[in-house]
Amino acid sequence: MSIHGFRAFRLTVMAVLGLMAFFATSAQAEDLTNGGEAGLFLISKKGFTSELKASAKVEQEGTGVLQVPGRKLAILCTAGNGLGEFLGDGDAHVTVTFSGCSVWLYVELVIEKKLTHKTKFPCEVLEPIIAEALALPKKHGGESFVLFEQKTGKANLATIILHGAECPLALTNEIQGSVAALIEPTTNDTIEPLLLFNHAIQKLLGDKLVWKEFAPFEAFLEGSAKGRLLGPHVGMTLGGSLAGLSSAHASS
Image 1 (cartoon, rainbow, N blue to C red):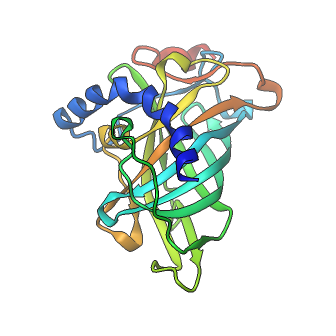
Image 2 (spheres, rainbow, N blue to C red; image 1 turned 90 degrees about the vertical axis):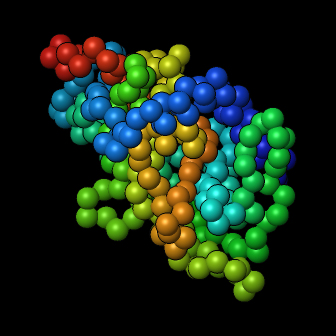
């Protein structure tokens, strides 16, 4: 299980290694507490209004990892599937369900260290884990991002329920805050854009994900997922606006 998780995750790590230095430098140079500048979601490289009734599916690649380094804890999930309903080109409602989840001792997933998760906690995860968020298109440094933030009026992004007589953790665990993803540049405005999640991206946009029971320690999401439009928009390109493309809405 741990080796499988590392191999599945390795491609994601390799995909973002080239961007890590840029992200680390930018994070130190700027405090983007607003999560970057507002952007647009684009369909066929144009903005759109809510009348379009567009939706998209999101599918996790390999194993995703929710980590709390400060408490030496990691949740690994082998599958994640989501549905996004666009409210227009400025936001979307997203619901994601995670399964194949287990609890492990934290390991820093840096490919050069060749580390894997080896120590499993005696905790069972009640599945599926359901996460609900408002997705906002963002832009920074010529790149496009998606910020997934807690919905107004909602207490949490997700709740993780654990059980097991020997489980040393709280049985009810609340995940709060927001998490950012980079739209991998070569896949932006394609039929199947790739979203990348990691520590550096999350820090770059100044957002904060918190496992409430372990606050003030931050949580980080590591992994990747592909998106694709559904219904009458199947086969159309999907992406986020870059700097200078904010006029796309007017052309829709």
